Image 1: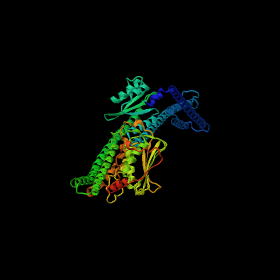
Image 2 (image 1 turned 60 degrees about the vertical axis):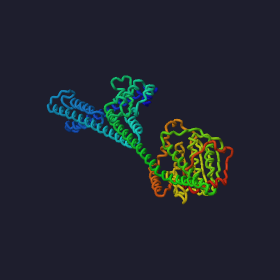
Image 3 (image 1 turned 45 degrees about the horizontal axis):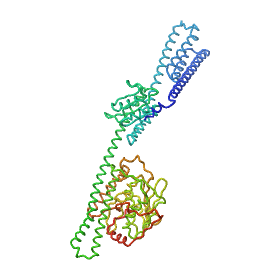
Image 4 (image 1 turned 180 degrees about the vertical axis):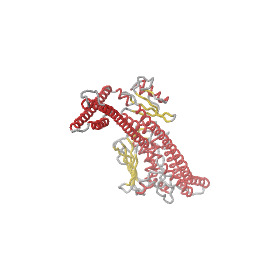
Length: 604
């Protein structure tokens, strides 16, 4: 669980500790040798200067200035001011032995020499002590500045963090590098079983108790013998967010480390609380946006439903009251009008249900291996009655391919794309439906040669409530067809694009992974929900415009809405040929003519 436990239990951990101690001992010996060298050099220089002064006839008291200078240099260049004081004592003894009568004796008969030596000893001691204190203050200032730089660096990183886990990971890495020991920060309850298996039951008990009781446990705390780790609660006010585990295998924490650690953990706890509050705020904002979208969508749909319902009701009542008085041709036209309005309503409802499903976190996708030929066949057969004068050419994969997917939703995507091409490609245009394997992904492509997409629409064609203006005499949908396709494909871990092809038409292409991660099962439809929520803010604006326009004109403003999928039992056998052209028929042409008066505007 914790890296420190692995390091403590790893082979050679004892050898590492021995090597560290040996390196420290070598460093101390090198420093001592350097200090001795500096003091010896200054001592020789001071005594040499004194002999020089005596040879040129200067007063020997001038040597005291040289001695004071040597003491200052020794106190500065060595690790402690005590080396300077020791050098002063050596100066005093040598001066008394060789330059004060009687020579080669520590006895002093001249009172002036005695007073001079006493004053020199006092000055040397004070000078060494002051220099030593100054060095200590400089060292403390440097340590404080270093601590402030580290705290500033950690504070900046915590401010830039976007999640509670990210803040904890950043703090743990920084503490590990700055303190020279492994530090691990865990949010929530520690995994006692894993910790006991990798370290010891004592560490596991200490970690759980630290989280539950909110006080420090483990190594260095009374009552926790045998623990290798020190556990500190990551808390703010009265709430414990997690635990901080510190490797104490090679020694406990000193006072400065504890102070630094306490400051960093306070900042980390604040960052964790801030990120949690931001996450809650984002979740609440998303819920509000969803509810606002649903409300606006209902306003739009309520107006879009009135016209076809009114048409169905009016035509049905007219037929009921005048069935024997109208001629067969008019009767057929009225029945056709009822049929097309009913189908339009069914398409709208199917798209609304699909959008609701991909937007719901609690409804997981039903991933099952599906035969690609069958999925394409279902979608093509569903659109056969409505293809009109269009020719549909199906190109199945070379081999039988199984792709994990939610079959109903992917059929909905293909139906939407084929229906979109049928409705908005030029008359007599051909439509190609093809698939091919591309490495670890399966590509699905729906293309036509019927005019293409306006360049200004390519960048926003998969948005909600985005469409070209409806042609006069045509009924608009609510603009969810292609946005639903995008949400469904992204929920499967795929991607969808639209572009103009070389045939003079439009191509819609999406890919699905050939393998599905089973670990994602049971986690809800989060990917779909995220994909469906990306454009909520823009959707609300678009939906509001749609609803407002509907209130004045009883028309929609948006994209082609695809029909619902059919059962796999109706699928044709498309695996026997590379291309299966489906020529237009008179019946299909009649169906196309019958629905031209009400089909939605192109989502391009």
